[in-house]
Image (cartoon, rainbow, N blue to C red; front, side, top):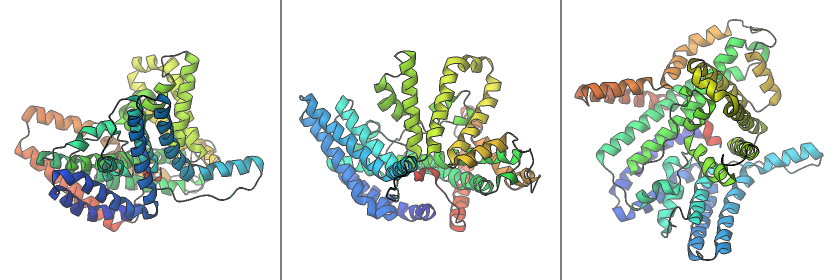
Length: 471
């Protein structure tokens, strides 16, 4: 599904962009809404009515809040209607089966099997549309009167499937008036190619190492191999999601939009707090703005502050998936952040080198919790990482050497590209020599090579998972 969707994107994109550029300014939002609906319908046509319903309900709720501006309880009623609808469809499709299974496990009462296909991007677009009605209710943005303009925002295809989560306030001005210039199109194309290369050339390759290791018996995984596999998954999930985010931001730039940054080299972080300021920044910002602050944030007693963090991280874990390992993953970060804020931040500041060694280790453990849903398997894999049952594999003690021989270059490249080394070097060259023709030519050639290799990989390979499309 995902593999063919990327190929469809390449077939769809040139015609969509050409149609969009040729459309008169007044009709661009209509064109954008139509091509976005076509893109979404190709992947999940049966769920298109839900998309229309989300668009209409939140548009009407915004208008209702505007119309009854002087009557507080009526304004709140429309806000609650929007939240009930969005959270209702999210719960129905994503969590109903999970809760029914757990009720059956706890009570022994047989429950119906309810496991529908998850609509593409539902976790993202429900949060986006909810943020609109909340912001309208709070008076942070003016309600959108033109349903075509609002519809274009809801179904904006570059980030519709997997983010970043774009609040209406982020693009309100550009929905009304935006400039499309050749430099912006060039910059957008550059970001799109870099994102595509990150996803296809790095995430896919290291992801196959994780998948191969995860399929083995625990006794056949050595301790070094377990850590290499954890590193592979850490790189896969970063380049998978940051790559798609870059593609979305690049496409948005080509359409005249400036979407918010979603990743800022999170693996350079010297603390877990800093990591969550750099990782999936739009999701972190959403929970901070619409959950943490309304609960009281940090401007309250220590007990309430801890309670607020617990709620936010339990919800953050559950947002990622209907499985207890995601809840555990969220609560794991809750515990880490509480400990860090109380005792460790000062120590991190005094021992920065040790902090930059310690944090990646913690993150690799975190991603193993995220990746393995079976708790028995999870405990066993974590045990193998710390040498439980012996350091070496029962069947192949040199498994880690074979892995490094096959994937060492990609792992090293992934580690280097997850750091701002190349970005800083490029900036130094520009500051010293300026945008010379030589530098521009080298950039163009490198981008061309990345594009050609990425397309060749897509055509030739059938392994092309998109981790965050599952959410």
